[in-house]
Image (tube, rainbow, N blue to C red; front, side, top):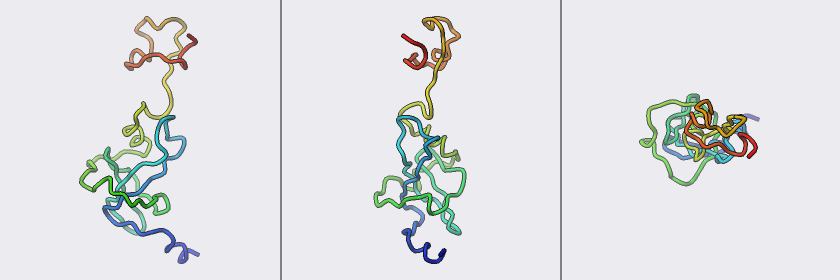
Length: 130
């Protein structure tokens, strides 16, 4: 069964682009479902991949990657920094990453204790009614 399954997925070599599926609990509400990655090294069917924000801090199996025909990233575009998948998603996100920030202030957030104001964000409808 293993021998038969090895030929089903196309081969990936160093420099190939692929898509890495992001688990739902690592995604923010506006984040994409996949990360575009480039293969940095391949050894024993385990792959080290990277994005424009850094390398993934663990080796991935072949079935975690979907081959791509487009050439968006090159090996030289990847900085020499390691991050988790969740951190790479947050760094490449147009929003603030996973989840929302809420302050739960009872009044109009005029004091310096509001966590939204401390983070440099505006309060939103999830913070308090009104």
